[in-house]
Image 1 (cartoon, one colour):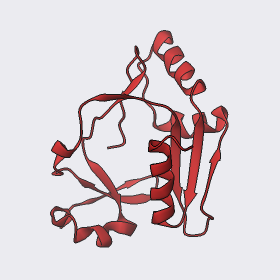
Image 2: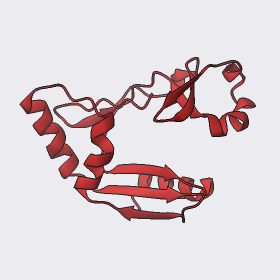
Image 3: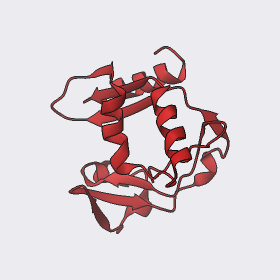
Length: 144
């Protein structure tokens, strides 16, 4: 869940799904699509209730690596406006560092920081799923 390995050379990202995390607030909506969620236990991460879907059909994920062209943070709020904007490297590191594991030596830390600094970084604030889908499509079609 939320684990994305980054290769040291070349700096590519790799698919590594171990589970899907589902916030309790959307659990009932997804239950019809994923009946294996029934009875899954809740965990709490940063005071947010989360359920994990481990028995997902991972064959739909590719094991190939991809070049990362940008970092995109996604934030849902029922009170925010739909918008996409660039954010500073410092702000991106504030989001990344608490949840990032970096091999503890200078070389790996330097590679990671260089990698972050060379990428454009965006944040998508959304309240509407269709808006989020449109933004993601634009990224994958190189329109942003």
